[in-house]
Image 1 (cartoon, rainbow, N blue to C red):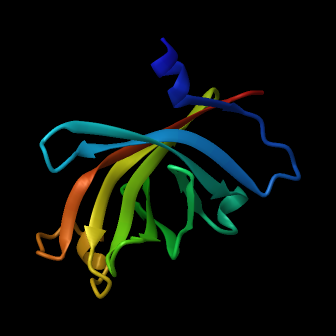
Image 2: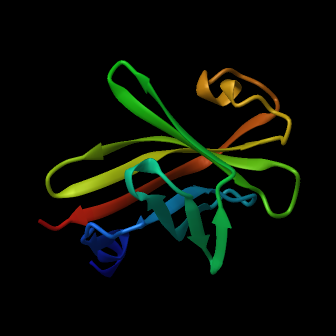
Length: 144
């Protein structure tokens, strides 16, 4: 039960909020083949205006790029973060569902080389410089 509760963040947004902090998880498989999960907090700017930050393992990283596209009525977002130990970048590609009681952000995580054109990730084309590393989901309860 504690694990389920740790996934959820209860928040309320007032008119003066600059960003929304949403708790969640990254998941994948490590080099030894074991499933892993890492907790993180994603800070999203109110109304899409401002900086996107990620706080994971006590390290806060500011996104280099953040944008959204629409396909078949679905909003797909891309968040690009620098990878601290190399010239590569992490790309979160996902979507969201927002209802009256909760907002859920979920998708995939890729590592791409610094010079990789993001359209390769957008179009899901096979390319050696785009490597799928796992996924993510962030959920927040909405209080009315």
